Image (tube, rainbow, N blue to C red; front, side, top):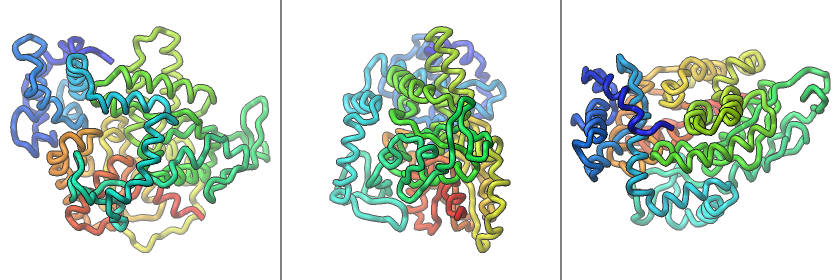
Length: 451
């Protein structure tokens, strides 16, 4: 990743036109100049020039950014504002260091079976003591005052059994191993040319990257993903040893830990010679496909070759299903109707702006037999922003309220998206409005339609 001083030419391209002001969710909510991209770039430029110090006020202003990319998309000069903000945050970490607990978590994530995973398993048993069930809304509420968690906030429960423990790193498509009722295609054999079906037909070998939320919180999305991928004709492998994609660390400016996580995942996935690597988390897709290159671009030509090879294979699951695996043809045997059930779709920032994927998720919703009712601002950020929703919860919640009201206004029965993080945020926002709208991942809609 580039250092802050490397962005001086980009900072000079900001002509203070204010185009970004109409798209920035933090400015729309806070209404002050320092909340806008233009205001933050002015502060950063002043800091680089030595006109202001790295003060608590400066840190506060650069923390009030979701990294949603709306400003960059609207900017006539395409200034990479999110990258500049992350580089500024890296300056803060270099100067002040990470909080002790945050540092321990980031380093603990390097080993998926390390203390973080073990701590979360213990927490999954203890959570009923600290939280009361609100399962009808897909979450839990605090019984006691807790740091960063108000009693009105809807939080997702940890899974009783984590996704990676369920699949246990096998190549289930070859072994015919049953995982919680899900049996992947066992009629496969390996030969010198790769994997073939029993009829001799070549198959597509896909590596599945779970990501933290699917692994620890929403394993059902992972299982639904495997089910849909197999319906589309893929051989799915879930490699053991994979860990966090590093995006939480990147968004904080913690490039050192993010790089260590990227190297770990690179080693795990390049062993299998996949045709494609996919994930059902838009944030993870952006991390694996785009951020890995920037994290490891100074590691020499051989590393560049390895990284380019990996990144070129990464596809978001919605892109993979539509454009590579041709799922519509594979699902032609499904029922044509879901009884007029209406779905509205929320575009995750990392998917639509980061990866340019807009139409494929909507096509999959229609393939599953649902009617789509678009909200007024489907691509407006939900306010999650990774750790932003923890460290700036009041601001995050207000941004989320606008999104939840937009969803409620459609009259849809289901709000679908392609990012587990957005799902957590949307459920919290809809809960506060007492809106009876179910939040689901697109792959869950598809999996429910497969017999």
